Amino acid sequence: MILLLLHGPDYTVFDIDYTLWVDDEGGILYITFTPPAVGPYTAFITFSCTDIPSETVTLTGTGIIPALVVTPLVIDFGDVYLAYPSTPQTITVSGITLTGDISYTLGGADPTVFNITETSWTPANGGTLTIVFTPDDLRPFSATITFSTPDVSPDIVVTLIGTGVVVPIGITDVQILNCPDEGIMRIGETLQLEIEITPDNATNQAVIWSSSNINTVHVNETGFIIALEEGTATITVTTVDGGLTAECYITVVHGVMSVILDKHILEMQVGDETTLIATIYPEIALVKDVIWSTDNAAVAEVDTEGNVTAKSVGIAYITVTTVDGGLTDVCQVIVTEEPQLPTGINIFPTALNLYRGDIYDALEYEIQPFGAEETVTWNSNSTTVATVVDGVVTAVGAGRANITVRTINGFTAVCTVTVTVNVDSVRIDPPMCNLPLKGAKVLKAIIYPSDATNKTIVWSSLTPDIATVNTAGMVTAKTLNGIAIIRATNPASGEYGDCIITVGTGSPLLGIEDQNIDDITIYPNPTTGIFVIKNYKTEMGNLELFDVTGRTIETNLYIQPELNNVDISHLPTGIYFIRIKNDNEMIIKKVVKQ
Image (cartoon, rainbow, N blue to C red; front, side, top):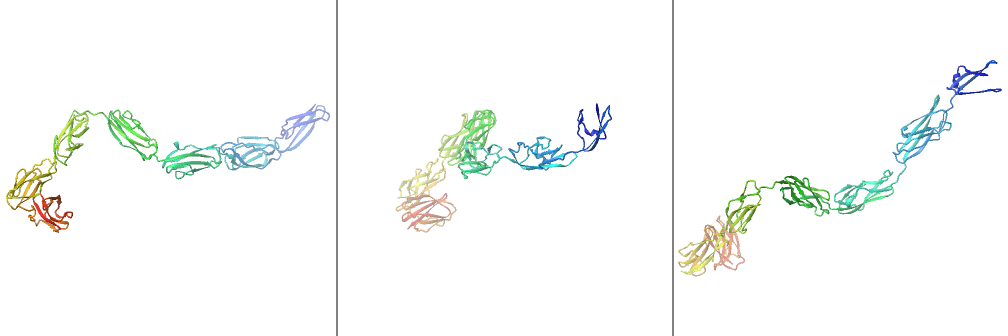
């Protein structure tokens, strides 16, 4: 039997894994070992047997590692297509030939671009390294893989390059999401249109906006539209990728610009009802519908027509809102308790004496009890005599009228108004006449206005030695060849009228000579039509014009101090007389018309 002994300075280097001895003629010893280190080694194997001397075999050698071989040194992936940047894409890197026991590390300019999720390595000659990674951006990238093995240098560096790109995704549909309600826009209204592109990850999402009628609706490059004038327009969005379109059909109308209530404060009592009126501007607005609402229905309710009902004490706000545009206006409603009803009423004064044209401001009243409802109405039983508005009385004509003030529950008080119409003037008909000696004539006094209250006339003669007059206006001539002045006076007003009477034969006026020459001057006289009366007196007066028969031509002409023009161009040629009268005197002047 043969024994084996392994010994020597480096026998441990062998790491014997397996020995096999074939005991045969010319026997063979098989030893399998792996040197654990690089470098020279020496060991001995001694064979021994009990019957023969031992023999020693010397083993020498050098441990080495095969050279590191990596090919290729540059791997260009070209375009690395990504369906979408955020969606990982897996790429397998293969074709790297390796020999020897190696390790590898990832580095370089963009090591993180790979986002490695899996690696696998088949460590054999001509083996394959598989790296699964996702480029993190749509850009060129560069990274390195360094391969190394112990005790061998230099390391082998393989460069990886490529570009992350997106695979183009086409648009299949486009929609406008917020076309105006019912396609209606008001002049001046604006809107930012919004679109939806399908799929939402389409590569080219550029669009083009257009309007079929830019004068009616304008649209900019972002889809912002503005309504300019009445009319219709179609707004179209078109995709650059594929030319797909979507449209908005728009009608521009005159919209509501404002709404105004007829009242903004209402004072009501519990149980009262009233109606608010809302006016829409402009009048040509297409949609004028409104919505009524109250913020406190327990205090005041409002129906769809703006009818307001006071329900309880408090304050409520009634709001009207336009359907078109949502514009609003508000009325404050103040509701109080129903007031106490009056038990009586007094008026002050209870009687009034007025002249026609007078205005009395104003009758007063007192309601019992204090604090009772003060609403009253006014009435006149004869508006031809006196009218009343809110207690203000206007005298209209002669007579008597009862002015009544009435409470809401029917209590009344009366003021009796007596209206007097003054005499403005008195005229005698005829204003001039001729009487023979002992002759008589009844004169008639005419009072203006005819509805004057006091028409009393007192007759008198300013020349009783020439003619007298009785209370009935009968004139009696006393002497021959004289001029008498008979006067009719209204004592209530002091107004009067005169009649010039010539006692004797001939015209009643031809014998009259000019009076008060220094006070009144007439020129030119004779005249062809227009003459001037120069009044040196400070008083103003009335002027009457007569012909030689005493017939009145003009009455109630009015002259001022200084210069006055009188036109008689329309009268035939002849002799005329003017009578100027004021409160103190009467002047008669002769005028010749050529």
